[in-house]
Length: 290
Ligand code: SD4
Image (cartoon, rainbow, N blue to C red; front, side, top):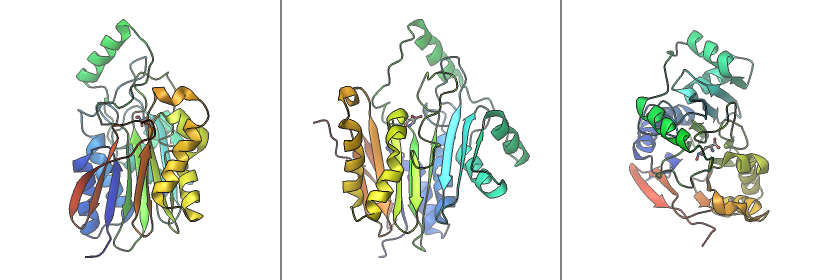
């Protein structure tokens, strides 16, 4: 059996990862497979951290962020999207059909409609009720592992050995209006270099942004580190600064061109899905805070 194709993603998003793996097996390119995979969670109304049904900001607006990057080094991103579910697919359209890398808010939405995306209300009744409940004592404290489902970041290595990825989120629950995290920022939430490999992040986006986590991991791999060691070093950069890491989770997943996978996080509870040779497995990830 050949090593390729491989799909790997954050958290136990089994169906999303299997969808991407099957798409790769049928011969699809890495980026198309990744977008097909993450769309499962964008459309999953029960997932309150990605896509439609995501938790809103403090004022009740659901705003989605996403980015994609392909094996040519091209990328696209959208931020603060309030009316379109499939934001990873929209990010790909930005990459392909505009001269830009990133579109925000109303501009991203208007562009999306012109590309055939439907206008939708992303706030489900469940998410609205949870927000109403939160408002009774509106404390802002990140929850370390949100029921084991969270931002989905996915890396795919296709039959040709090309790597691409996607990262899509509704951001931190009850964030300030206008807040953008790491997930749509190329180099932070996601980075791909087809000569080396790729990396994705999930968790407290502010800390990933400060250390440009995914770019860091890819550069460390370029300089010879394994995906596992590179993820560990990127977490070390965060936890070595101060003790605040005790209150938040961050997890990285990386894959190199040989199809080797690494993952590391701050706190217990993070897992990844790995699809290879037609088998989709949930894998526990080692953590720093023991
Ligand atoms: C963010 N990294 O917006 C995303 C959210 C996430 O766990 O991963 N949630 O900061």
